[in-house]
Image 1 (cartoon, rainbow, N blue to C red):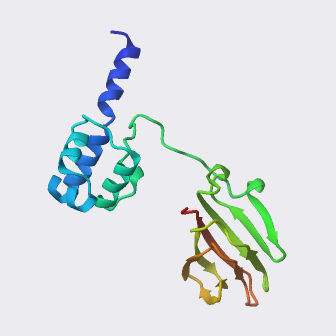
Image 2: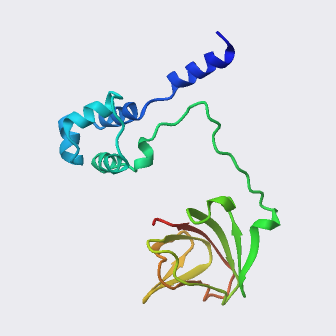
Image 3: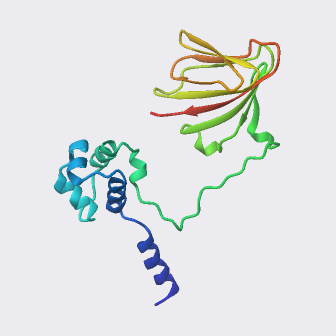
Length: 197
């Protein structure tokens, strides 16, 4: 047998099927097929066929199974253990990731550009009285801001909160919002933008 065929067979054995992943997750949660059927609305017979690899679920059925297991649907998709893991490095002195966002505020991107409109991660640096104004993002977008130094004020819609070093705020970003430094010292923070929709 050639090395190519051997490697292909080996990979097939290493990669769990969709049914295996669902069965493993169900077993970890100590659920019977009857339990999962009640929780997902998918019949016991259908679940059994899926777990045995006799049939593949539609996207709608997969979502119902994931909801029954209280996991994201992507967690049930098989992965190849031999595939290389994602590995990217962003150096602190790489200027292409640093840009002025508005007067008194500079932003350094900490996440790869190709992840934009999925998850974005930033370091924010505010001079005294610096402010970052944002229009409403896509429906369902959320942000999490953590203050590393100084104080920052977050305003979203009609709500406003002042954050000190170590504080975090999780808020809706699908309406106009702002982050500002009303203090007299430089303030820094880390911002995660999550496009849920």
